[in-house]
Image (cartoon, rainbow, N blue to C red; front, side, top):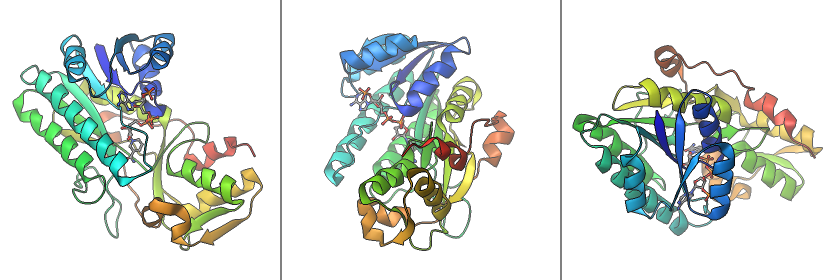
Length: 293
Ligand SMILES: NC(=O)c1ccc[n+]([C@@H]2O[C@H](COP(=O)([O-])OP(=O)(O)OC[C@H]3O[C@@H](n4cnc5c(N)ncnc54)[C@H](OP(=O)(O)O)[C@@H]3O)[C@@H](O)[C@H]2O)c1
């Protein structure tokens, strides 16, 4: 397949491009800067210049390819307003891409997060949260999935709290950054709350499988570790950085504090059984051993 991808320079997107190219696909990748274009070319992709805001460019990318993987999302999480702008950009982009594909039966794979469900492990059948700061993302993914009834093979791959590679990335990466800054590897509460995780290279395989074969309107979980206790994550970070490991007040973790304090395990049993996805890269706790002081 000739595949149009946005976010191809990201942690996940760069792994997805490598995965596609090593499985007989070719890639057309959106680049919003010359430097990103150079990275994408070096990775083996053909480059389409433009940003998420250039809806005509997105439509042209979708029109000249056999399928789309949408991963781009603004990286400014500093204020609620910045996140809202990123959500608005992504929503407009998904709307344009989806509209271009109506009636074609071509695939579009997009991304969201695993949901959390009070008192049990979340599964692929649980709905995304449609309230809270990222509710707009859930709504735009749900709208895209509804295009399944209009001749679009739209699917969503849900990401766990940590997508890691070489010990970096995701919530665990934020804990590491905070630990370096504070001189202590902290966790909120008693640290028994669990976060799911996946290695970026395993997640990339799932994006390819969804692109190639997932039925229209379906949702998948890119989860290898159903839930690592946060105090276990903090313990490896502390040991690798040579820092003490302690429970710290929730507000130490800034805007992420309340989310860091939640138990949010997620499973991928349905995904593994149905799509034959078999993650093979290191678990989060093993991958964190790559951290250097
Ligand atoms: N639990 C979760 O909910 C969860 C967890 C992990 C990831 N995700 C999602 O998965 C996706 C990929 O994650 P990641 O970690 O690989 O992301 P990342 O490393 O932050 O990379 C973001 C990518 O988006 C591109 N981008 C950002 N804004 C853009 C714009 N306005 N126009 C065009 N391109 C733009 C960047 O391009 P440049 O090279 O130009 O910067 C980069 O390729 C994101 O949507 C992320 O939110 C969700």
